Image 1 (cartoon, rainbow, N blue to C red):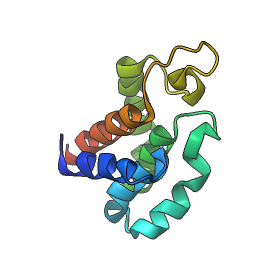
Image 2 (cartoon, rainbow, N blue to C red; image 1 turned 135 degrees about the vertical axis):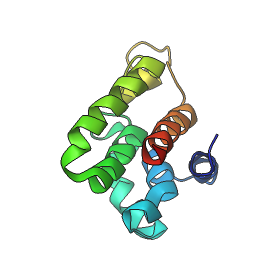
Image 3 (spheres, one colour; image 1 turned 90 degrees about the vertical axis):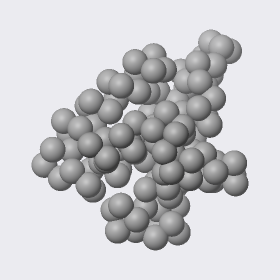
Image 4 (cartoon, rainbow, N blue to C red; image 1 turned 180 degrees about the vertical axis):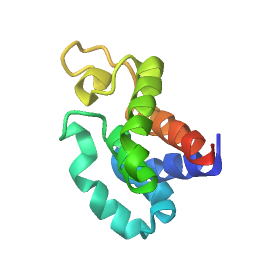
Amino acid sequence: MGARTEKAVENHKSFYSCSASVLGAFADTVGMTVQEAKSAAAPFAGGRMGKCGAVLAAEYVIDRKFGDKAEEVKAEFEKKFTEMNRTIMCRELKGSLTGKPIRSCRGCVTDAAELLEKIINE
C-alpha cells in the first residue's frame, strides 16, 4: 500500500466521507488544500450521484490531472475497479438492494486510492 493510499485509509478512519478520504489524500497533486478537497468531495459522498464516492473522487483527480486524456484514463480506472468489485455503483457495493454487501466503504476507499496512486505514478 502506497503512502497516498495509507493517507486515504487514515482519513476514512478519522471519519472523513469516502470521497473526502480519497480526494484529501491526493489534494496536493491537483493544487488543492485538504479543506478545499473536502468541500469539493461533499457532493460525491454516500452514493448521492449513483457511483461510489471514492470512485467519483478518484475521477475528479483524474479529470484535473490528465486533461484531454482524462476520459480514457477514467474508463480504464472504472474497468479495473469493476474487475476488483463487480461494480462502481454505491448501492450495489453496499448491498442496499440485496442485503449482501459486495465491499465496505473502507474497502472502496482503499481500492480507489490504490488504483489512482498507480495511475499517477505510471
